[in-house]
Length: 243
Ligand code: URA
Image (tube, rainbow, N blue to C red; front, top):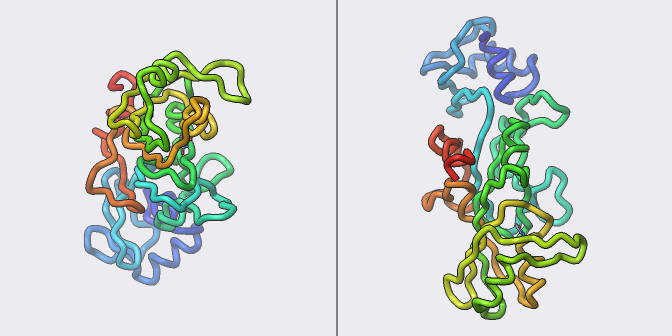
């Protein structure tokens, strides 16, 4: 692939801008400055730098972000900063086949929810991870206002009715880690689902953290606000057969 096309595919701006970056000597491949935009490189696994920032070529982007509290999962947030501001520019500008540019969050977490958020520019992946049909388990650590008991857990497993839908929603699994600390697994992602399920029992969510999706656990060394590329092992941990 030509270097200018490669830079463009990774989100470094318009084709003209990418050509300019190369011609001005701001792009290096394997430590060597390359000033000819038409120079061909094998993109798979290519490492390069743009204005001193190291980057690795990824045909499609699959990332995890440790979402901190106080951020909205929206491109146009209303009251809080967007989670997308936590990502470097190229990830937000990558050209994608659809109308929307850049990576998109795989489902949404509320402003005050923390934890594992996946982002990608692969529409089929986003659909698969979100679709209730694929039943990808999402595990939430829920801090409760009032203590729960076995009867409450039984109701969550049997299914509770939310006010906007007569079909009961069930917990795929749930357990009490402490009297006011619930571990809840869901395989669908309705709006405010955890908070509404807990509210249906007359209780209230005080804190909400997503620690796992499929078999992919939020790494303990990924601090709130940090992101990283998903590895092949991470992607395998998200496949239904692994879950
Ligand atoms: N359920 C909720 O209520 N909020 C979230 O952020 C995620 C799941």
